[in-house]
Length: 251
Image: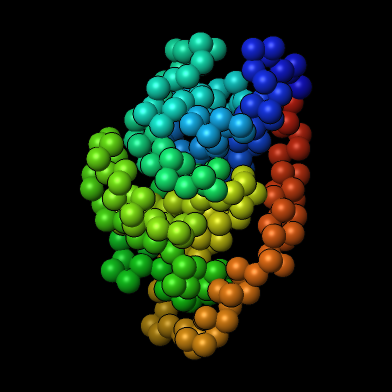
């Protein structure tokens, strides 16, 4: 493992390593779109700054040193990150949510085929699976406005997001947030799986959905305090998949 650069604090380097690992796990689970889409993480102790990917690096090769510290306006904060390219659409979407809510520490945005397919369906995510019931009446929607280059869209993104953790960006993709990397990863994993299941299920002539009462009961189960240890355990289990890469991504 590469020694932490003296110019970067221990807490920031730890955050960089954790975020680099998350990028690689998103690649592991095939949620990438070439060099597009983004994951961001608030810098510990620096509420106005967050880390985002260096544009042009594929997720499976992301390293702690590839990440860029930027402010909510997309400005690169530190000299050691100068020269790294950041996708404008990335900071527009992510900065809006980080700035709006203090408890949003991690934001994941994806363009998977199944996620985009569900985002293009008029009724959005349907209660067809246990995975989907995690989001029963518990997900936001945002209308497509073109590639997110305009900072004017940030206000509408925040308004549509409300207090939900996840959002379906119409005709665009999926978005998940969390107060930790583990929580955000858990949210995007379940949302992506729910979309995969829906697209497969819709090839059937008839669809069966649980009763409203069961749907409401299940989403409460997902939101109970008992879920947090499971979320943490799932994150550490996922990290074990790329354990042999740690020396590389934490460099």
